[in-house]
Amino acid sequence: MAPKANAKPVKKAAPKAKVTKAPVKAVESKKEPTEKSTGLVVSVLGVDGKAAGHVTLPAELFGVKVNKAILAQAVRVYLANQRAGSASTKTRGEVEGSTRKIYKQKGTGRARHGGIRAPIFVGGGVTFGPKPHDFTLNMSKSMRHVALASALSEKQANHDIIVVDGFEALEPKTKLVAAALGAAGAVGGTILFAVPKEAVNLRKAARNIAKLDILRATDLHPYAVLTHAKLVITKTALDEAKHNFIK
Image 1: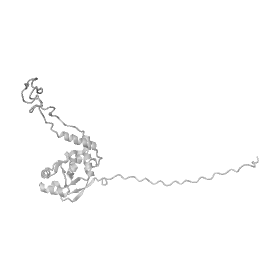
Image 2: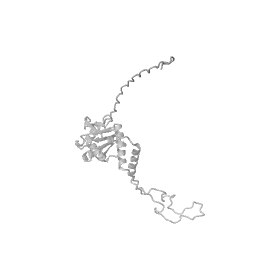
Image 3: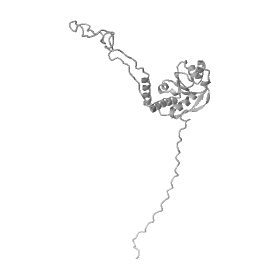
């Protein structure tokens, strides 16, 4: 058949332009914070106050997020457990005195009274007074660990922890220990000195220093850490704390 005269020529589709994809940039992996960047590597000071090396503080004790709620609970439990609960008063039935009616019920113009031992009279019983009571509170072992780690981590974040070495070898004299602590920067405010369990002579030499409290490293607790301006701990005591509090 012959083509129609009015037929329009068919236009060919233009070739598609090639789309070049931009090269994908490699995503830089974020480096995990090192112990040095998080402030867990601290200098160890000698008895002369000069740096004698470095030590890495365990992150399980000195690098955790501070849990203020558990810290407050630990302080409450500690203070409650310090109470002897031995306060005691006598009621009107326990005080010494006569039980007779002090004057007749009517006709005197005075108030009605039945006995001289009533709380309203001097020497009478006490109303709702304290009686021996057990104030002991308990806290789980895991919560105690979190509280202590929070207290130590807060101290480390504020740069209030000083690690020292060589104190056990000092002659057991208060004057020498006080001079060594001053050289290490343990001045200005109350100081908590954590020492090894076997350092008996060091505890005896340091116990008479003003504004200084001594604890064995295994006996550290949140209240003691929080209520002192600085924590001074020997290198040996730090190792003892690691083995005692980190399982």
